[in-house]
Image (cartoon, rainbow, N blue to C red):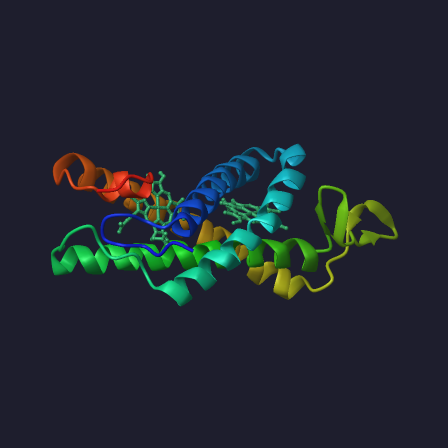
Length: 186
Ligand code: HEM
Ligand code: HEM
């Protein structure tokens, strides 16, 4: 196991950042698109990948607790340090809240959760009209739905701030922050 240093990031940090990061960007985009357009064909895909991301997310959180945050490539201003740490915490916590709230919303709402054919929580059809569902717990499903939408919007803003920050380091400061996250020794 390779630890993160000021000049190079370990393979755990690199692999987990990009697996979770790319999956998050896709899930956020699909989530907003399907909610806006009511593209129901996308729901099972969103739900399946949304459940599967929890595995690399758990590994990532455990890895952060065990190894700490990567040291910065150089000394930053205090304000920059605080802002980047705030955004990193927001993104990491968002990767935990989104799958859990999504799961609770669908499961407690009676819609069920299936991961590519593997039924985790069955759908709860309304006996009077099997096209509709009966919530298992409507109050919990409602709160989870609110949380899912709120966390989704916050994380989208977080990802934008994160990307602007990374580009600032690369283009204005010309430091190795981005190159190091792409695997280079800086
Ligand atoms: C990291 C994982 C996830 C991310 C980033 C994510 C992101 C999103 C976003 C951004 C939206 C649109 C919300 C809005 O604009 O109001 C959404 C909607 C939705 N998500 Fe997720 N989601 C994730 C996991 C899950 C999981 C695990 C499930 C269920 C098992 C799920 C079920 C849904 C459903 C059903 C909607 C549509 C709600 C509606 O039509 O009212 N999501 N998701
Ligand atoms: C546009 C794509 C992305 C790029 C170019 C990018 C780039 C980077 C870079 C260069 C760093 C290192 C910062 C430093 O050295 O202090 C970093 C760290 C980090 N990024 Fe991203 N990132 C992207 C997307 C994401 C996404 C979508 C998430 C999560 C939702 C995320 C979460 C994090 C976190 C939590 C860190 C702190 C270090 C770690 O835990 O690995 N990133 N990112």
